[in-house]
Structure formats: C-alpha cells, structure tokens
Length: 448
Image (cartoon, rainbow, N blue to C red; front, side, top):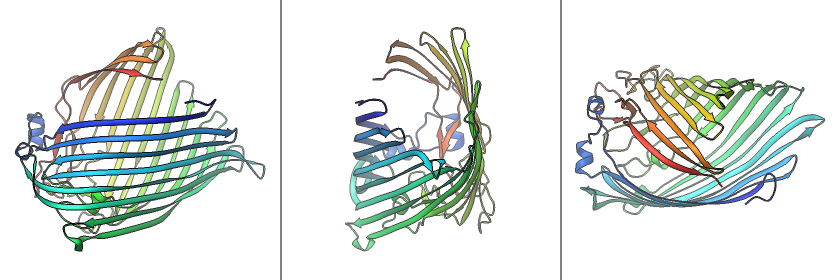
C-alpha cells in the first residue's frame, strides 16, 4: 500500500511445491551424444528433489524528509525437503530475519555528503535426517541432527565531497555468525563454531557534471563456512573448513552519454582460505576444502545502446562481457593452476525492439567464448558454446502482457554446468550436466 510519494508498505506471500526428478551427472561424451540420458545411479535410486516452501515478507520504504530514507523488512519461511540421492535426505527447516537501512544526504562542515547505515539479522534451524536410499524410499536411518545457525551484520558507509566532483569514501561492516550442531545418534559429534570479523572499505569517487563516475575502492570481505561446507555427508560432525578472507581492489567507471550507458570495472582479489568444491563421487555432494592462497582478477563490462525513435518504437542493445582469471597462488600441490568451472571469457547480449503499442521482440545470445577447466590439475576442459534465444510479446492492457520465450533455437547440444574434480586424469569424470535443449515457454505477466 502507498502512503504518498516514496512511502509504501508491502506484504508479500509466496508458496511453492516443486517436484523434480534428478537425472544425475554424465560423462562429457554422454552429455553431448545422449543429453536425455539419466545416470544408472539416478535410475536405481529414483533420485529426486521434492521441495515445499512457504515465505512471508513485510517490507517498507519510507521517506521521512528530503534527506532521509528508510528501508526495512521482516521475513520468515519454512521449507520441507525430500531428496533421495546417495542417501535419502529428509529435512524440515525454518528461517526468519530482519533488515533495516537508512540513507541520508546533506552536508558536513559545508561539504556535500551522503551516507547509509543499517543491519541485517537472520537465524534458523534445520532438522536433518538421512536414510539408506531404497529405490527412492527411506531405509534404515543413518543420521539425525539439528543444525542451528545465526548471523548479524551491522554496516555503514559514507561519502564526503572534498571538492564539487571528488569524494572520499569510507565504511565497513561488523559481522557475527554461529553454527551449532546437535547429533542425536552420536552425541560425541556435537560441535559449535562462532565467527566474528570486521571488514573495512575505503575509496575515491570522481563525479562529472553529467553524472558519469570514476571510482576506486579497496574492500575486505569475510565469508564463514555454511553447513554445506561444515557438514559433508556421509561424514558426521564438523569438517575442518575455516573462514574465507579476501582483500579486493577495484577501479572502474559508470555513466550515460547520449544513447550509450556503460558500467566497467577491473578488479583483483587476494583470497586466503577460499572455499573450493570438488566431486568425490557422482552421487555424493561436493566436498569443500580451503585453498591456502588464490587470486581472482578480471573485468566486468556492460554497455547499453538505445535508439529511442525507430519505426514507431525504440531499439536497445544490452551487452555484458566478463573476463575472469581465477587461479591458485603458489599452491604446494596445484602451483599457479587456474581454478576450474569459471570460464575466462563470457558474453551475453540481447537486442530489444519495442513498439509504441506494447509489442516487443528480443533476440539474444549467450556465448561462452573459452573452455573452462574441469579439474584443479588443469588436464581437462569443458567445450565452449553459443546459444541463441528469442523472446517476444505484447501488452493486453495497462498492467498485463503476454510473452513467448524460445530458448536454444538451434537445439545445440552443449554442457552448461559441471562439477569440479581434483585430477581428471585420475578421477572419474561423470560430472557434466547437459544444457537445456530447444524449448518454448508462454506466459502472462501482471503488475499492480
């Protein structure tokens, strides 16, 4: 509900009931030659992922005056998961949280300034049971645990314009996270972890009269391990996975000039304890370990080009390009090898023609220009690919539209996703998931 300009309260209710059969992962040859094939273990275990979710959110955006804006939300959700894979995972979970942020603009000592500050809090618990998988049904119980977790982040950041165009940027966030694990079958496996950190941020911002910006920042980031990393089935208790800690420097520019809008940033991160995953068996979730030192560096570039008047409509080209150079840094085992899964070069583009009557047509391309490694030893690569799509539709009123979304127009066989292994020359490589074939979706969008 709206209470005036920039004042609103929204109540959002969401529910989902999802039932998915899981085909399992394949070898590269199988994924490209027989993409509809299911793995033998997926068939014998009737592998699936059945999920029901209920979520309720109350959020608000409230402007107190010209200089102060408040945004906040409280939310909660419940989830039930029935997931036959190498074993039957049967979980019931509940999570709740709150978020608040205040944005302020004004002056400090006669100089233009702005700032934001706030907090994010969440907590939840999972009743985690596991059973022997008997063709998709529960067999003997193998695990019975309660997983409790909580997190709190308090953050603030401000900009002070020391000249009309140059601003000093400073801020930071303090965080705390807890993980408490109760093993009802083997109490000696009970475990608890508590994490606390502070992440500073500093930078410079130059802003032109037309709004274009050039910026440079140095930021620390900390990521505590989740239960997915700490509890690695079929093991019990906590595995010795530690916090991931990184310092990231970035320099970039964003803005708009005439028909062009751009967002370009170059970055370099030095990471200690990066949490990396690898597959030990096609039927068991990925294991997680801490690398000693890794480097992430690259470029993220976006460029939009708009022609506002063309054949009684408008034409917009949207493009995103990523260069990602992720690698180990002098690792005792892997040296300076590249990290698997992430491609070095990736490009996405869409060209939208929109008529004044509401009709629109959007051809698109997703192009993985380079072949990413599959393993940490850098002995095997997944092939590159390009996939074409086409979306179109028309308005049927001021708040509704019909659309059709056609994907993979050429029905290309490709591998869109895969899991990492340690050394593909030694380990099994049934880790590939075939990309989606030619498909068409028709839908109705409504706004109110």
